[in-house]
Image 1 (cartoon, rainbow, N blue to C red):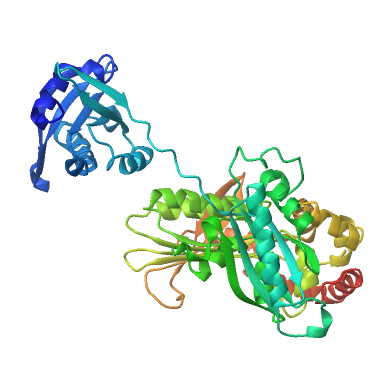
Image 2: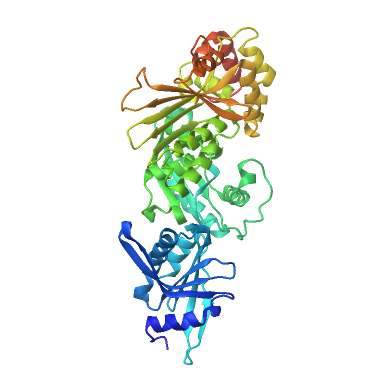
Length: 529
């Protein structure tokens, strides 16, 4: 009886709306809608009201070819119902009824998740006696997101052949235990060959493990392992069966250090499951970002990303991933979020670029960066918003001070917070360095600054461009503009003679103490490789 023409099935359905859901009442068949300024019009197959008084758009399709039009028409009619009949958007629902769901299931499932209106699907059967029966379609769930978790490890091999064999062995173990998604980077020693035993490394990141696998009941652990217990259990099982010269722990951010190390060279990537080399959707740059954790903020230290506030779904995750990387830094967390919110309020498509390095570990900056590489290791933020009219907002975040220091000095306060290098190392690996660092930064009189330049032209900043000083006051972000009289007073209270003293100049003020502390820590740590 499904050979009936669509208009006859529509009439039958209009008379038997209760088969869809109790309380549906007919408003009209072929309900007309139009919007003359937009030069568009249409007719809703069936317009009904539900038992809560909401308007229900019912779109009927009876063949595979016409079912492809359903989403277009439902979206169009929902918009026209608001424009032509002034129906509030929260009082509109939609039902798609079809005898054939082969072409509908995937797109309707996607639209139902993202659309602001309630959207449901029904599979229709027409019987010989012209009665109808329907079955509500179970829409597809949100696809499980496959990504590289923060559970990482490094394996070292004597030869490239050993590394290839090691990778095949890791693949087999992972497949056996239910962890099929792996991403790895090959890295080779290219300088100072005599200082290390193994010259060929494999940097491994564990992909997400589906809940319900044998690994879901993994034992409790700390740090990243506590956040991702199944993936940590998978890594433990791999490590228990791996064959290599050496195994070193790793976490998001370590790969970035290898990339910047002149003694090592990333030579390629390997993957399984969602990260297989033949995936086709990703490039080498994507693999690097995944393992480094920069594009998700998984490293809790570094984030690099771009987004457009008008693309709402991506913008929400972009903001939250950026906030993840700012954990442990309440000042920048408040200020960056406020700047992003202010930027998103501007009209049109906006290109936002965000680069964050937030180690929350001043001792690390001194030990690794002093005296010549402070700029590489110090906390910093670069944020750029490019607006449709050609104007821009550029923000620089730095750790600065509003004084040139005094007594007691750097060495004194550092030893008040960390009694010795061992206590620093214990705090770092325990994941609590940010707590001690907040205390050390406060004692030293350092502050996390946030300075903005707004330009209505391209090129380098000009003296007439607006300056913005962002501060946290009473737990909330405040912005002082150079166009307002309050700006000079805020600048005076938060700078040294009108300028922020950068971290490098501050450390120079205490260079003898900084040198002594660095040598003390270097004598206890093997970090010069």
